[in-house]
Amino acid sequence: MPKNTRSIIVAVKGIIINQGKILIVQRASGDSIGAGTWECAGGKIDFGEGLETALAREILEETGLAVTVDRLLYASSFLTDPARQVVILTYLCRSDEYAVSLSEEHSDYQWCTKLELRQMLPGGILADFEQSRVFELEELL
Image (cartoon, rainbow, N blue to C red; front, side, top):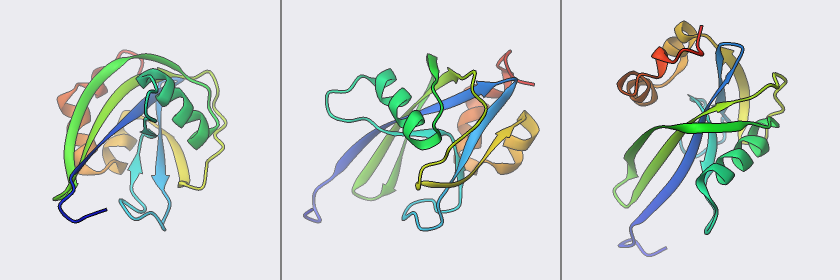
């Protein structure tokens, strides 16, 4: 890619709730962006793919969980470098399944309470959760 080319990436993430807890996954140590950090499952949409369809596919690929996509909770945008902007749409999701089967993209997972999320999530995601009132969701312990 030429140096003067700018790109915008659109990704979808899921705040997956099961039994009052939220699933977070840890990026693999070999990942070029955010290695070892905790995040919600999800990923990039494929060209022509619907947002909710992309999210359900990404979550299934990354965690092995089938989810129901409920509603859009918030959108955020940031630069990963001067020529690459990422737009993330974060949805509330539910799963009746609890057993996670991770893809190679992630090295660990945890079903977290609100307190655990506050301790484990990176500052940017935590700020988005606070601003978007994720911790006030009725479904959470």
